[in-house]
Image 1: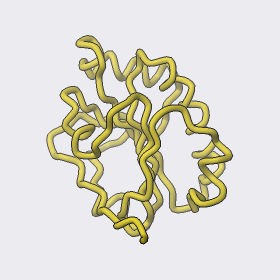
Image 2: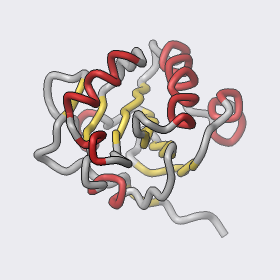
Image 3: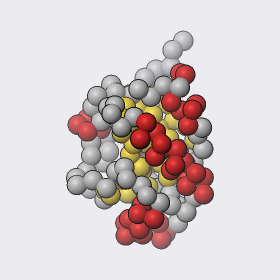
Amino acid sequence: MPTPRVRCPEFLPGFTWINTRRPLTVAGDLRGRVAVLDFWTYCCINCMHVLPVLKRIEERFARDPFVVIGVHSAKFFSEKDPQNIRRAVQRYGVVHPVLVDPEHDIWERFAVHAWPTLVLVDAAGYVRETLPGEVDENDLVTGERQLV
């Protein structure tokens, strides 16, 4: 029996965004694009291990309808401050858009339970897979998970 497809939840309004001029929407900005949502926090070593993988994937699919969006979901109180997150984004060379989710509102909408977690969204706007933990780059872009 095939797994039922679930629509990607919309991002909630009123959140701080980093590396973008305006808040992004699932219905508008992700339409027709494959997306990887990276639920992370800047004090998590496993999250830091995923960042270079995401950078290589962004470069690999730069000409395709593909986007990475970080969802920074704080683990500690100091990680809720957007200025601290901006500094971490700069320090780690993150260039993709980052949604600041200090109270785990977006985290809960996507039923995330661990740092890091990648949520793969297809071009039709459906969640294809949720991958907790560190992910191997080759496994992510080939085989059944083939992104684009």
